[in-house]
Length: 281
Image (tube, rainbow, N blue to C red; front, top):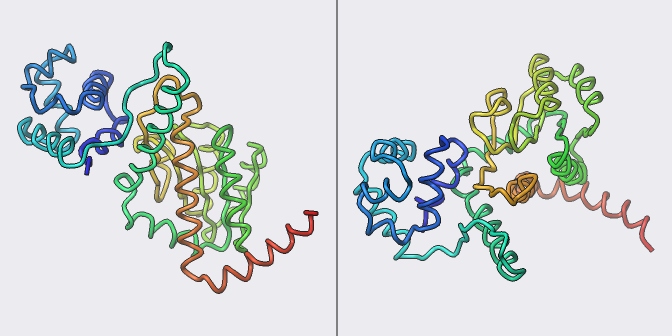
């Protein structure tokens, strides 16, 4: 298991600029780390040993030796199949395809580490106990919100989705303690979404969010947040891997919710399927 490498990736967005340099070097050269002293690692990253130790403490390691042993175990017991290399302007099509697929698979696999089952259970409990669910996101996150709306509406939940920011804010003024807002934002700093969240929260609604940044405004406003954190590269516009991770999280929430009361939800799902089939030849 490459849990230590997953830990670096999922905490990447909380690191300082210098610490990200160290993280990038380790992710790209994991097999070399067991052979490097802390002095050599610091030199390779053009930084100091003190900065390396601060980086390790962010990962909850207080000994470079222990960290080095963990890296050795991760790279020898079960070699990682993930692709940590950034894309290069000179990459050919096969290389681009290989790197994108590898990066995306790594991001999806990281869900196991960044969202424990105990947190997922709390999210599902919020969904099932709420009378109404408002699902909001704008831009690329709006596509995730629409997907969630489509799935949960199909099993009979009372869900609302408004892509227009004005309607988002208007409907949130009518929120109450029986409502849940599912807010989606990669950065967690979308002004439109956060304004709607603040309004809904002031009216007593619970807030469940999907975001990649634990220290974001959205995460701080939420009663519960699910992280879709990935080490997105400069070529991954609109946080591509994070978007796919969020779609996967929506699928997990939907399926797990459905399985809580399969008989009840299947009746609604079947009715939805029959209704949609009328539009097909």
